[in-house]
Length: 319
Image (tube, rainbow, N blue to C red):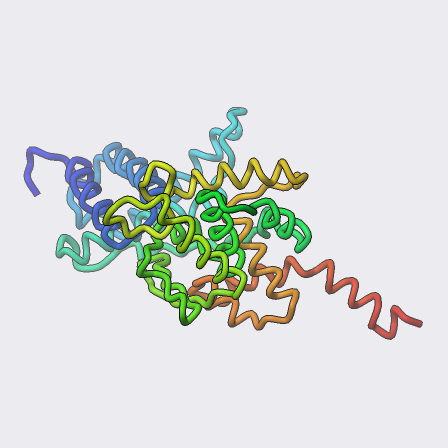
């Protein structure tokens, strides 16, 4: 390493390349921004630690020291009455995940022999229940609003039916193209997290709404040569944020007081399927979860129903 530049300077240079690498790996912009902020904080700490001069000095122990520093700083800020909270498990996970990516990039490109972040133990954080689950009646209210032959109305109906049928994520919705849709087989080709591809079945109601949009809606929005499945009034690819604004307005108009967004439709899809007897392993594949325990969050949503069954069916409760 050149004497003219500090270790922190070299890390800042590598940081830019690492973030570009994450873009290539198809990480979301939000995740990349979160990792960037976490890694900038780490590099600032490295700059303050005069003992750290070479990349080889960034051992597993050095990274452990950094995590201790973060915990102590958060604790000190709390004692001083500042609004900053103690370092939670989820915040630790973000910092550790960011370090894994940076040092994974350095190891993969030959700057380090191994990834020292492997020595960091990822804290177990309790998964939160989904913020909003709509009832079937509430979903029907939303769907009933999107009626008519206006091209935008046909488009928005198709989007909502597709979201409710498949449970796809916001960024997965934005990336859909005409080639993603295999309508005759009732399948949707989805590119999920980590650019993993999966095929998701489409329900009949969603297929009908998509057919109507493709035949009578999209041709009136379509710009020559555009491959995006869902288009805006301005002839470009529709951004999820634009549909989300419409969704929130409609939810308020039909009397739904819950927080409604694209992710809540995803949660609602999974929960309604579970309530109606779907195997949780099927829901895992549908949602594109890598681990089954990620999907099992939806079994906890069902606890009020389980209590009802207990009260109605258990011998000790009946007699």
